[in-house]
Image (cartoon, rainbow, N blue to C red; front, side, top):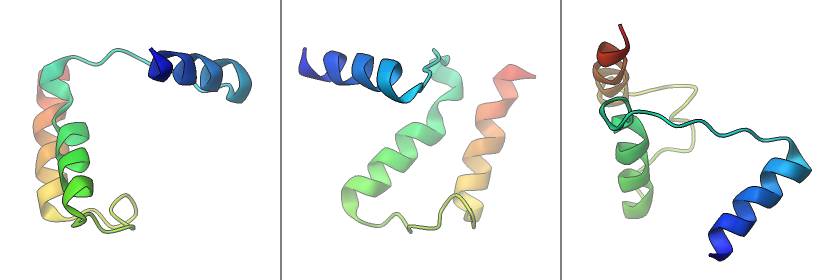
Length: 65
């Protein structure tokens, strides 16, 4: 339950918002988390996305179109 409290605190104090995303469009979050856990995620992956990241973004956007 501490995580929920932390999230609520961030939302109120920092003005951060959260949105529900369909599982079908959330592959990038899963892939990034998995890569981060292995220590293989480059720190500049947002500014310079690899072809792997771009393929996931493309696939994630498909259900939304």
